[in-house]
Length: 265
Image (cartoon, rainbow, N blue to C red; front, side, top):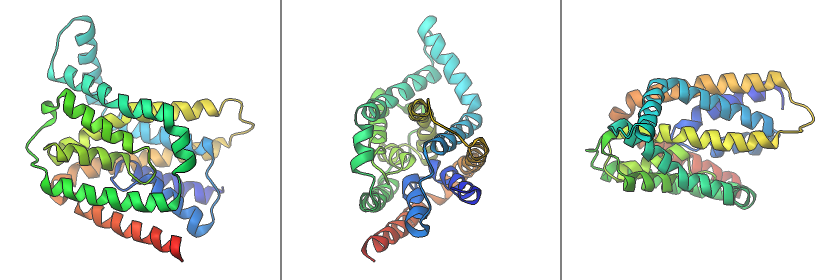
């Protein structure tokens, strides 16, 4: 992989990580259309670290307040809406975390194909459209419960299937439960933090003992994926109430159609 490819892959990862459009569907296209080589484990870790840094920086105030409230609930027994939300994020992380640890390798081995990605891109795109149209959009961030956190967390478990889109499926679940678009997206992004840490940590462990790492390439991947991810989060949360999910649904349909065309050509 050369530096031009590294730049494009990092930008693709940063854009697609938090938008409901599936990062795996986009990362498979350069190799299928242009014949680019696999980016490798080290670069994969780098772009995920960049995405993690971006979401932590954007939600830094929320993270500090949620962490402090959670610690107060544990050691002082003081329960607030912030401490409850922190517990719900932890609770929502459990389904995907456990499934990833147990079945992650099997899913990566057997389901990472273009046909699976094409199907999930279209199917979960249509599901997103249905949830956006049918959802009441009346519930806010402080109206999460154990049940709703588990439902959204259970949906996040499906994102282990390539092409699903982690943000897309969790936003879909939250919208279907009646949460407004901004709340659905905000909870989805906060829920992403522990999952990205877990997945990035596991991949990082696989790098132990690696023969050589191109640190310039790693720096490019981390920096560019972080910048683009931060800008995407900021723009997405700013416009989501006005534009809705339809533009992303249409994009997913076109992307799925392109993948089907590539399969059958």
